[in-house]
Amino acid sequence: MTKNGYFQLAAVNDKTEIRIIPPADGGERVNINELSEYLNKRGYVYDLASLNSVVEAGGKMPLVSASMPIERETYKITVSDDGMLAKVRYYAPSVGGELTTHEEFLKDLQMHNITYGIKVDVIMALYKNNERAYCTDIVVAEGKAPRHGEDARIEYCFNTDLSAKPTLNEDGSVDFFHLNTVCPCSKGQLLAKVIPADEGESGRNVYDTVVRPRIVKHVFLKFGKNIELSEDKLSITSLVDGHVTLVDDKVFVSDVLEVENVDSSTGNINYEGSVEVKGNVRANFEVRARGNIVVRGIVEGARLIAGGDIIIQRGVNGMSRGVLASKGNIVSKFLENVTASASGYVSAESVLHSVVYAGTEVNIAGKRGFITGGHICATNSVSVKMLGSVMGTATVVEVGARPDVKTRYAELQKLVADIQKELRSIDPVLDAYEQKKNSGAIIDKEKIKHILNLRQTKNQKTLIMEKSIEEMQGLQELIENKNNAQILVSGTVFPGVRVMISEVSMAIQSEVKYCRFVKRGGDVKMEPY
Image (cartoon, rainbow, N blue to C red):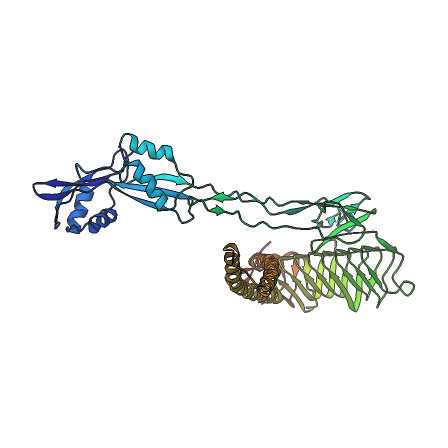
């Protein structure tokens, strides 16, 4: 049986000596610091080096003392920082010294205010045969830990990840239609439900003080029209046949608005749901949709702004004034003289003299698969077959986190720090109020009103801080992904092209083929692809 080593005083020939009893079966050796503390409290004089040698080798050594008392058995009670565990550590009496009793030990626990979770059977066993394990921590009381609950969450019963990409057909063309980027729903269909929070259960420490579980978060469903909320407010269903989308944590259901063309016969379109144009969108007109915009024909110098995806079958001739802005993805046959911006990816067969921004990647594939002129920017990657032109057309391709992402991240950092500072000034006031209220003190109405305002401010600030931290985490992923950003060219790169990765650039001086550009050691490097 494993036993720790311990020490014991003994009176021998009118002198006091310290005896070291070695450990058994892998137990711990006597701790020199613990021994020194024991002797110092009792006024013994000794040589520390000699004492250390005796501890290491085992044995005994004489001590110097003004008197030669017979030491009684002692112990030390300690409680963990969280108050959940109380331990005792016994120290042997002098040879022939008196032992402690379980009655005085139990009384001592009460004097330490340890009243909950006392292990009476363990204590009685210690004193039954008076065989103590000295210099050994023994658990004599243990609290009940709280059971922490779980935050409430929302389960969406439809596909919220509509990031399908076009496929490349055998003939080299790109299939822009079977994308599965619109999620249909039917009347009566369950759209989302709340899984309620589990509040958890309180515990108690050895001082018999309630230990509460962590505070859990509660959520509620956010939705637009054409949706019904259940009586218990825990689920929502669709009231119509249509399409369902999730935008900024809010569920929308709408019918698709179908028009032949967007021109003088319709004027500009601003629609809450998705818009499908069977023909063309003429120059100078505008289409706005909270959902997706699908155009079966061509877009000529128009503005298309979508909360979802923008899909254009025959392509865009922006006439240097066209704009595409999507919070989802952009898919088009071609992009020419247009400014296109997507939170997701941009996919086309060719890009000519355009400015293109993508939150994730730009993929230019198909038979032609070229980018000529303009400025192409993506956070993760740009894939293309032909980059630039034999005429040396100025073309800039950039990957990596954009400067506005870094600026926003810094703004959020400051906002979170300011809120944390404000909360640190509010919490002591609220704590003092709770203590005063629990003591039964009378609190005037103005003070209560002030406390209620502080609580409301704390809740509002906490919500803003949580949302800011969540946004920061998303931006951090974008910033970290810049180190893996790359430009892939499966064909030829022509002179006149400038590639940029995280603000480091390289100008292409001569024609190269089958390569990729990455950032290595602070410089843009070209590698085989």
